[in-house]
Each structure stands twice: as C-alpha cells, then as structure tokens.
Length: 145
Image (cartoon, rainbow, N blue to C red; front, side, top):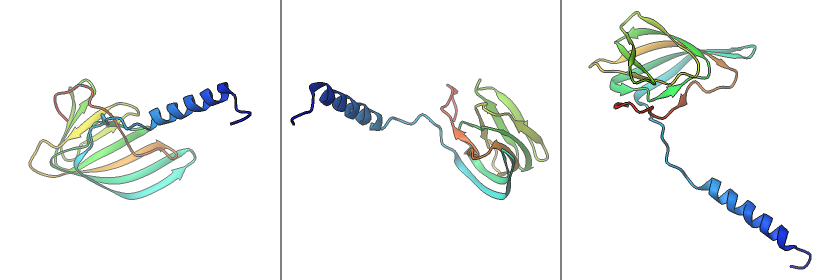
C-alpha cells in the first residue's frame, strides 16, 4: 500500500465505523395503528399545499396509533363515536356522529374507538406539498395505546 498514509487509513477506518454504526437497527418507539383502513377519495395540489379528502374507518377497539400531521386537517364523524387524546394523556374530544373537529399541525395525538361499532371519518388534509398524511410518534407516556 505504497503512497497511502497512516492518516488516510485512519480516516477511512473511522468513516467505515461511523457508517456501520448508523446502519445498526434501533428499536422503533412508534405506536402503530390497529383496526384502521383509509381510502383516498380525492386529492389535488394547489400551490404549495396538498389537499386530500380521505375516508377512514376504525374498527371497534381500533386505534390510530400516536401520530401527528405536518399540516392541518378537518374531520367529520360520519358514523360512530371517536375518542381523541392529546400528548398530555387527557381526552381532548369525544366526537359523536355529525361532529366536526380540527387537528392542528405537529400536535401528537391518538384517536381510539372505545365502542362496539365502527367509526367512519371523512377527513380533509391540508399538508405541505409532498408531506405524508401522518407521521408516527412515540407514546408520550400514557397508560394506553
């Protein structure tokens, strides 16, 4: 290995070690949804905003999992009753059929179906262009998921 200095070999070794360290899998702390299905009914991009209209069904005992949105959303409960909780673990809404509610951007929350009947939500998302509809979040320390 003529012409290769000890300093160059050390730099390559450190770079390789750093890359290997970054590739080590870590345990996920997100709480995935359960019993939830979604169907996009309509979508359009206007300027820098993606507008998506989506039907979400949450089965009895189902949960959205802890998550947040990069934009705002406006939802109407078409069927059932949704229990909604914020990152302080307190209920911030009990939404029956016909109720409308808003979820502000970047606020961690969870929706739960604590009833024996499915919930159907009709939701408008107003997200930054290209943003996902929601992003998983870790349970903030609540006794439920």
